[in-house]
Length: 192
Image (cartoon, helix red, strand yellow):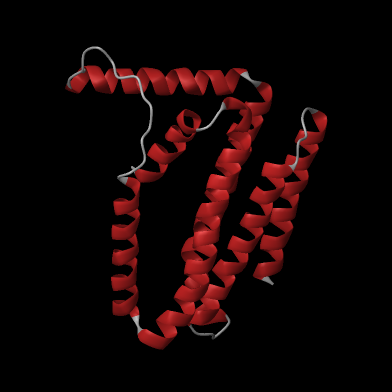
């Protein structure tokens, strides 16, 4: 619930001409926190165990929720609130409208399909990585953290480039293709 709400709020918080940069900075913040958290998480897990990490995680969620109380998001509320089935119908209608829009835009359709396939193949890697580290590499949990941290570094660099590169049209398409190829190659290297 949290991440989609934050993503949906970004356009209401920044001017339209700064939206690309704001989205990139938002993703950058997410991946920096993952980078630091996962890198340190592996080391702390090896040093202290899971209980201490669960407690630290709980405190960071409490701090995050307390700090977000002060964010004021301008919004337009509907005149009349919808109930149950009506809300669900509106949700599905809006979702279908969004999917139709994406499907009718060639570039967005291709990006949507590629992103779906990419996540389809990345999910098993994320699930199997701990077993790969422990059973195949015969390393401890800190190395799992290092591998996740390296994924975070790549993501941070990608979002920095995406947020600062002002490319459009064919150059943007080429940049996306080379980024996907680069991600594929580096995932293959990790496997070996």
